[in-house]
Length: 580
Image 1 (cartoon, rainbow, N blue to C red):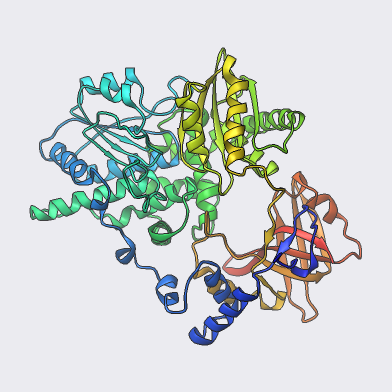
Image 2 (image 1 turned 135 degrees about the vertical axis):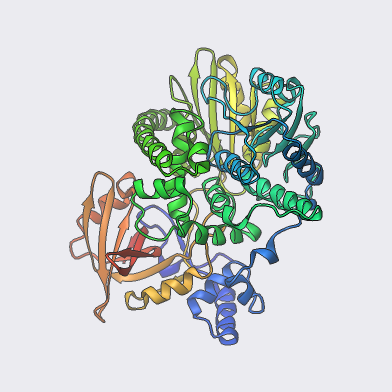
């Protein structure tokens, strides 16, 4: 049976059908409210996440000790931790080879900070995105191997067969990217996405894998009557990596982020404190702040500047160095936005000319900066609701990034193209991947990728329905209500914040800058909500609402708390609207 349209909205201003929770979900929410005495809207949020009344208390107050998996569940973990500790105890020379994104930088910082607490230093090596590309390469690994006893490859290395063989020293891989049936000749490969793992921990980012290795290292130290460094204080870095890498906020990831946000709120890490200040974060950190304020700035060095800036910022214990690095990353992030805007405009134009209604949307251009192609691919995905690939060419070789939609395993398809010889290099996971392609193979590679994605159902439907969790009156949208809803968080990938609809509202609006729209609306009881629609003028939403006149609208979006000047107010983040 086809679900009925919520508020009878079949075609919203963004051309979406609104879908409500359904009769069964409503009954379950009402039953949970009766059993638990929790607010109905909160119960609806819990039901949407598959939480039962019996599990609700534990879900609302998750304890890391209850959710933390045994590190030894992962293959090679005991071996990796033991080799790591041997290097520490015998003062061997340790190098850390990390990816240049937030996950890689956080992973490296976790190790550097832990080693510092053990009075041990390590060499940090992060490859240049343009000159070296993603992951270990033969020259770098050979050089590191010639003057180190142990190399730790974090957030990379699972597919680096030749570079690891070239190291000529022990290599431990701590990664989460999709592996093949064979593994490189490393001393240990710890990766929840190895082919011989059961996949239960496949949602972990690399920083979480590193954290679990440190848990096992501390456990082995305790067996020798030695106290290891405090690991709970490191959860701010795990939370940052989890959110920035768009890892699903389920299971232990949810506990990592929830506890990590509390650690971050203490502002004890010099680098994150400096970055929060320069990003003008004036309230407690949230997943949104990690993903859209801190993450892009940490990433900026790896995208268009010096690749190791992010890891250095996250690992430094010097306030002055932290301030200098944060300022540099903030400037690079501004420059990155300018570069991204130019590439996005060209890529979107090209994709529209090629057509955006197939299983795959893609664009390629000469001189497109490889540091922004991933962001632009994400923008194309959002605009088309299909997997997207953006490639920047330098001569006859192009480096690109790909982003997927829910239900389509992009990493597996990219790996298939690599084994078929259509790509020079490629890898990733379900939602994101990187690739290198020769110019003369571009068209064939994209055609084959489109074919593989079509078999998974990509492009089979139009724009996804907009799911509404509950109807609300402005009077009910109080700070206390939002706090109750947020107790079911943190919200993010695979655990979206509940979306509320406000029916038949009379609105006032004004444009903010070039792309955003400020909105205000209320009800007959005198309550009034202020809201904002970011990027409203990139779609039909902004033009339709800019001059509403006497037209009334149904509104859909999410609620959040905004603290300013000691006062906490509810803010509405508008996502869609429909004429009432």
